[in-house]
Image (cartoon, rainbow, N blue to C red; front, side, top):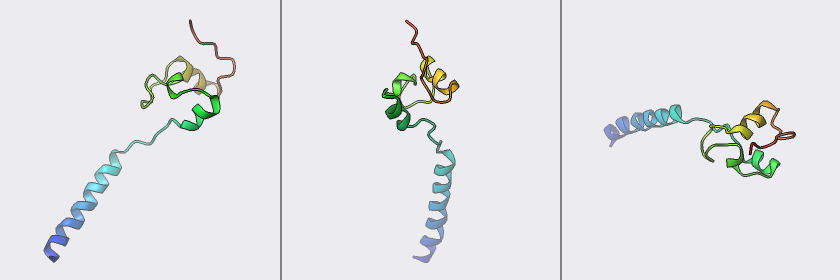
Length: 73
């Protein structure tokens, strides 16, 4: 039993470390969508991806505000 614990605990710590090293922090926030009254895809190409469309780039460049933004037609 002790031998098993001596290998299982370091293995679990190693796996947890690898997982935590590969986790990326989320930069987008649902609070922005709620504040602006828009869905996530209003500013993002895909809701779960960080790539911004024209509205998202405007929002980023103008201190997190869509004031003055006119969507392209």
